[in-house]
Image (spheres, one colour):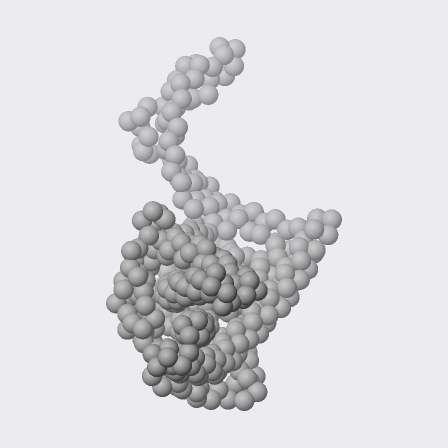
Length: 511
């Protein structure tokens, strides 16, 4: 039960002696709602996860690959807070500009912000139920009575005008907390809308970063593929010449032609993906595809964040928007139980009417024309065919459903962080292996080139070495992109640092 503090109001009531019964009734009407209590369960935040790590073993410093883009070792500082604008750690002004544009123009984010305003205003509108409803009215009529009936006015006239200004006051005391629980549910729904907006914000910033990284890596892959096609084309020409001279077989030529066709077939999907990423960047920044940003990104212009934060699981559930939204939904479901229980209790309506009735507009407020009335009505459900009972049971079942959804959201959040940590470890090892393969291919290429220059080998061996080198280069570029992208994924998985922005962190603890 929740009871309001009435000491101040009660002391004021005791200082005035009621002189008429209507004032006694008015006092009773004022005091009655002050003893209201809220039925149903009071909401308590779920306990934090009973774990302190995301993986069986603590996150260790990743391996490093010197002299390679994104080759720095990454360390994880447990308990370190995220910065609000984490994407600035990549030290790319074009990237920062894109995110600024996306935050200002993205329509999905604007829709989420509008949904928050809808929920907020709906919650504010409902607050009116806690105050009396006052309505003013004015009625004017011209009436003619039958001559065979007694005239209505005291003036014994059969035709008259009637003017009635009136004030109607009604109030429903929240004795059992129906309005309070409804307001509690609406407030929780507002918080759920807030965290949904924050999820859209966090997802948007991460999507822009990852899209830029993918576009940069893709451009490098396209350049390397073009070089591979040129190399394979030259090999085909050499083999065709050797075949014509009798130095090569048709089998070798056919094999190399197949290799050229396979490499050429990889280019259109890359170009298609490049166009799609360009269109995606335009959409994320609120532009039409024809207005896509013209900036070209290069992985070498990005800097890999090396000192990574790692929030505790107990902190994660306090900062991830999806977990907070699930918690707000749980709060709303809890309040709905109280609403269902309160509907099974009596409802009280207090009314008051005051006004004046006169035959002439100038006599409206003359002595003797006023009227007033006070009323109270109580309605209580007696038989509803089991409807109210089962509505309460349904509300309790909905709470159980929402509680399980909350637990699932927490588990998924922890899994998301754990998966990202594992990806960062493997990305570092993958880049190390790819860089080693590229170094070996480059050594082989240098040797082949020297042998050609010294006359110990043919040009065909050099082209084969160049082909192998370009393939390992593409693999290394992809490995670099993976490190950049999964680092962004970690910041998103940890909540994105939105709480450092005052305009986003408003009412952070009102859940």
